[in-house]
Length: 145
Image (cartoon, rainbow, N blue to C red; front, side):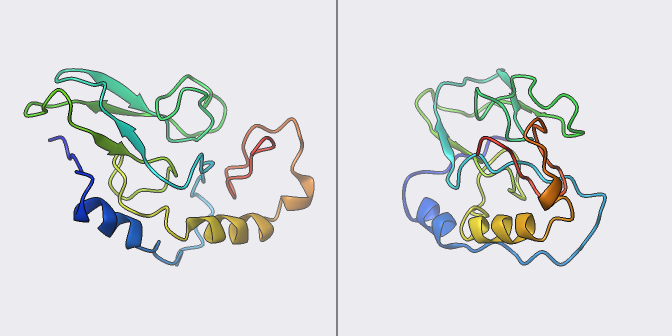
């Protein structure tokens, strides 16, 4: 089922939501890079299309995967566009990579920047982030962001 948000009160309600506090300090969690703190508005897909949503945040073809995730332990998510989609409908695809409803935006990006900055400053590897490391999955740090 395709979830489509209309630019209306539904989208505005997403903008108003705050991210949930991180309660688990699970070391098995892999954090992606937040590419942006707002959704991508996508309208160039049609029923039957299969797109691979970038979950690592490294793709240069956002919000879609370009293979940059290799070696991170994070893989893309296949999204098949289902029936009932009007040709010009806009789907709001998550740009922060932290949605609880992938690949769609759920408003998690609101207030996420502070959460990411806190996580990065508390990262055990923060003093050892090598410039040749493409993504620290412990905190989401990327050298060129």
